[in-house]
Image 1 (spheres, rainbow, N blue to C red):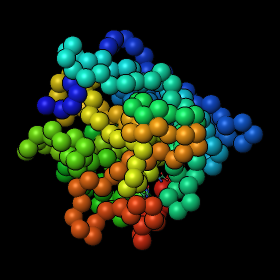
Image 2: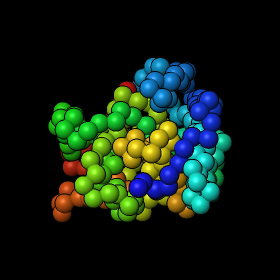
Image 3: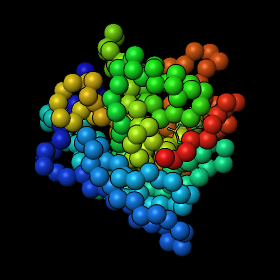
Image 4: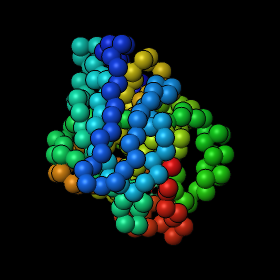
Length: 232
Ligand SMILES: C[S@@+](CC[C@H](N)C(=O)[O-])C[C@H]1O[C@@H](n2cnc3c(N)ncnc32)[C@H](O)[C@@H]1O
């Protein structure tokens, strides 16, 4: 069973996601559209301005009264910034309390084969936006043995979550949240604050749970072959 079993409180509850320009910096306005239940800008982000991302997420309610309730927030202001060596990164636009829902990792859901094909195409050592659910077993210790893996590829989605960098001492933790049904293969990935986060602090989560020795991400260092991700 995925943790914790959740369902959307009200199917009709619209997800509201808007972007406001950071004052004093030139920007191209971004409008956001719903695409496959995911929310993405209708135009690529091609500029280097900073933005505040304000968004809300449907608040998942426990399916049973004995299920744990995940905390959830109405608006979580985030700021997209260019971080030295790591390309884009996300900072807190205001203090975020431990346990607060921050954002969902949104993208296309892929099986292992398609994910591998794409990773080969993107270049495994370069910048990519692939979230490997099966590799998150340390956090999601209830991952079922033998359960088919799936991946979330955020390459074609401009949701702010894909700009969150990796750290070995992260301030976010990712949880599987079941929303529309009880199929673990359709779990949403919610990123939650694992500690109190101050304004301006960079948000990070740990990408590297299931790595072979010698593979994976450095904690804060540039990868040898890292290509800066273009936010397009
Ligand atoms: C999900 S994206 C994160 C946003 C990315 N920085 C960008 O500019 O779009 C993942 C990619 O960011 C880079 N990255 C993330 N965390 C990093 C770190 N701690 N050190 C170096 N590069 C990192 C890597 O290129 C990685 O493939």
